[in-house]
Length: 346
Image 1: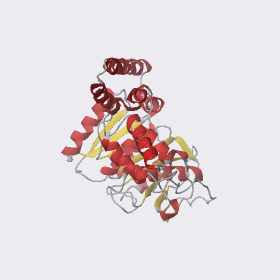
Image 2: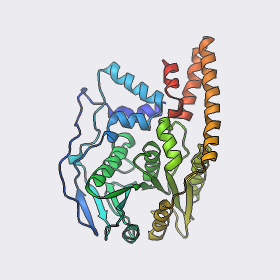
Image 3: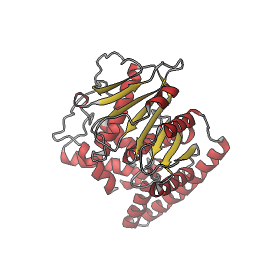
């Protein structure tokens, strides 16, 4: 939980005053078939607000502890951690416009500049996918108060300006950016229907990547497509992908595919690999309802037993042991354990 708090503490306002309230200014859509650099967006979203980020991206106990710390210090969370007028984005709009609406790929980079990876335009054109990425969103930036809200605001502004098919809104990234993309796919399945994890992934259901609230996690299980794209020579990350995919399946996430790009090491996907990933995301492979229900039931049964153990420890006056177990439950089960986990913590 300390990891969550350390990541989150920077989203508290210095004097308890919100930095910005959401606003919207009309802006014409950019033309198709071109790259546009240094784009400035204007529209905010409730999904990118600091309270909503905390609710979705932190474990329930970590989010509750953050709120208590704010109350004790007399501070409040900023409404929006990003000041859009200071931010620049790159946008690529494919040509021609698809009849069913554009796809959208929000890309989280490991680098600081906003760029379209070399060779990606033909694949984006082929599948009719708009590409958008933020500057100053690299590995050195804060995940919770910059990289995640920048990606959400990029999606919000493109969707506001173009006819985007909501079933083809994807999040992706490379290396450290891919790890951020994985977190966003998990916490925002109502925005992103799929994720391209390029040479960067982690297991879910732990202190670093807690599970979101139950309704969102159920949506993630049933409707999110995850594709892993890693160089065949990137042995370290291929091992990480295996661990991540194993974790996904343990948590009843079955729409998972992987691709090892031939002759590639730790490098951004080429045009062929990107085409494979975009094509894979377009194929609907909803999980078998019976298999999903059985998997969920097993998790709920194990969680129920853990909660009962905490309740027994509390009833017996063993509060320190109860707290230790509850912390482990919070880190492992995240939003699946709430609100009971939060009630017990109090």
